[in-house]
Length: 400
Image (cartoon, rainbow, N blue to C red; front, side):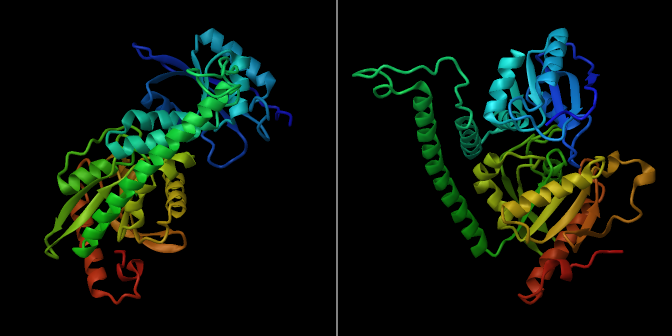
């Protein structure tokens, strides 16, 4: 498929004083609505992983090239630009097939990685708990298992015999695939035990008739900051992507109903979140599936908050939490211009065809937290007083 007549657009970026790995960001516009023309999110991901973006390159195509994803002509242009800028790595905003990645590395003579591997790398750096490390390692191994396409020069045939690696005539690629497969099986068995432990903990909460709330949302929307503000916890929170990966659960006391509720902070979502990560984090994301209420935290100061809401909804449906009642929490109100601030802090928002309660607040500044506590109180009262057939969005009327 030929390229649309479109020049390659290059944006040079300001360089920090202390460089890490100079990286060239590449994005290809296939006409999809979510294409990030400025590669802003990819740049933030790269910086989070410790890379230094030096330039952004975007171009248009009708469809990916089967061999090089961008075609040989654009690949030659990128190779020349990388040499001029002293780039040490090429990073694509889209996922590459194993063959495309291998061909690009041979053509460009540089390491080439994609968005999927970048997110996996960040998750690997940020995982702290035993469970989180297991989940990330499982996703990483599942990703690597698809990359064994004669990519390395050491994939020659191994010698057989006593004391030698592999069986008679076994190739290195077969040995690597078998070792990865064994590791994947072992990690899955360990994660099954973790899932049983979480199931036991949830059953104990159910016996205590605990009202369970999970914080969900796009990465860097302020979930951990809101969590800390509500329960006075010390969960790690920072203005960066995937600041925390491990689920943290604390008890929150609501004085108006005289009872404790359970509040969980979960991993953030992102566009094109690798399916391997969604599968690997099933044990963690189960907190959202089993919740009585989801607080979807939205970065109201972001220009792309509508797209981010859609992406969160997609993942929630994928993990089986699409029907759990929600409240939209439009966070970072303090970062919004005064002429864009809402006239009321509570109203309703149409989400998946249903009117959903919405509240505006700033977890950082503490604005709107009292209103959120009152909203949670209303939700608990609605569950304890309403008949079983009722639904939370119908019983909790939004203020207008």
